[in-house]
Length: 289
Image: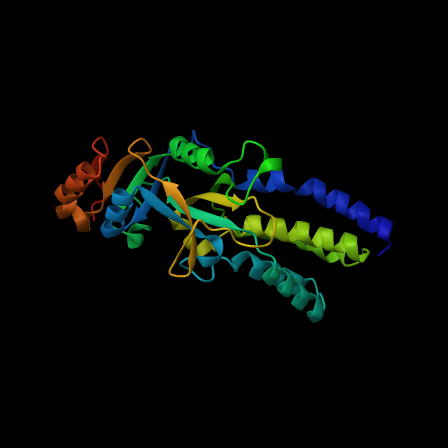
């Protein structure tokens, strides 16, 4: 394909998808989702209250090992359907594996009585969305990106997309861009590939297998602002990278308790009081079982 036609194609593709379009695709509206609930076990709840800390895990080290690779597997499948040569696909996989984007994910649901999420724990910590978001931005967001350090991060509230048609439509555009870049000179090709990999990394934080649609997940996604292709966690626990979120009585609104832990409500109330979370309500789930 002539280089001038390739550049025209890039311009058209860029108008279809860029950073703003990708973020807008998953944007979480605070008015529609005024509260966020994080599901966990009572023993974990006690540690959170006692320390007033929540550890936010790396996107590369989620509980489900296949979650991070989901978007990249879809992208690879698209390359296969496009009839791309095997060596080009292998090169794409190598590029994906060598590029490190320092993302961290805190998972929530707007549903305070989610039966689908009950298997994650028998209690849910309910936060006011705006307050917990502001708490993170005050700690991590730099006043000026030009002076940002490795301690800083961008904070994005994103609604997980489970719609496979939407996912494939976006990925088709990105992979067309990737394939077209192969026709360009080395420097330009590299820059376009990195742009595509950057978009894929962002999408990997909120594109999820449709099998899990009942989780109705909303995420607070943090991207460390350092661009040195290295992770910059605040803490490492059991070889897993973590950022630290501060939990205060001002940010935590309520503890929602599931039926199998109903008899532990007095214990939870006592622990809240002892940890200086006196005004946090404790409510039993509205689910019948």
